[in-house]
Length: 257
Image 1 (cartoon, helix red, strand yellow):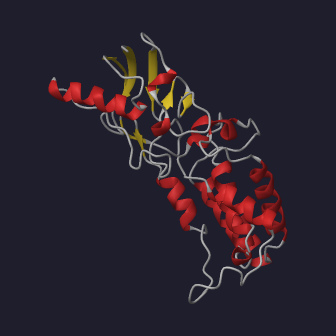
Image 2: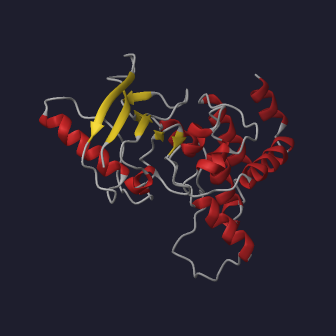
């Protein structure tokens, strides 16, 4: 098939970007979307032009490094799949495709379709872990976990940190990402000692990074390649409320300052 691409090109964070028109010719409908971009880049390189910069790694929907807004939809038209899992059979000959990076203040453009998602890493660094000294690997049945809690924790842990929830949200909120990280550990016994500090620290870091507020549009859930439910946001809000009430006077004074 032959396609017309309108690709966002931006040489650096300080340079104004814009859409550039390209023709993608003789593309197999069996090719993935990223393979299609590879073919276009080969053509650009042969013509002495700068190839399109885009992120990728595993190309199996695992790592979360790929992420494009395709025709206005994060990750494209295939529900429950990352950009690397999208195949060209979802398009037809002659289609025009608009490709741009994630759009959010907290995700500044590095080059072309590549954005800096370090804000998500910094959120994890302030509390997306447990610090319990567990010693050697315990027996699998040593710590009893209710089945429903284990399943919910696994659902939350499936978040790959791609940032599609932020790109889809009209407020550029990272609430679904943070809720998944808070719920993953908060549902397990190992995560209980730091549960209150974790939710306070992650939400505070999210706010400091410049992400917007959640107003329940649910676009995050619709665009998530792992189909993580917004029910986790409700769980996050409950944990945040309880943790805020339990703050020590010293911490409340410090937070107010």
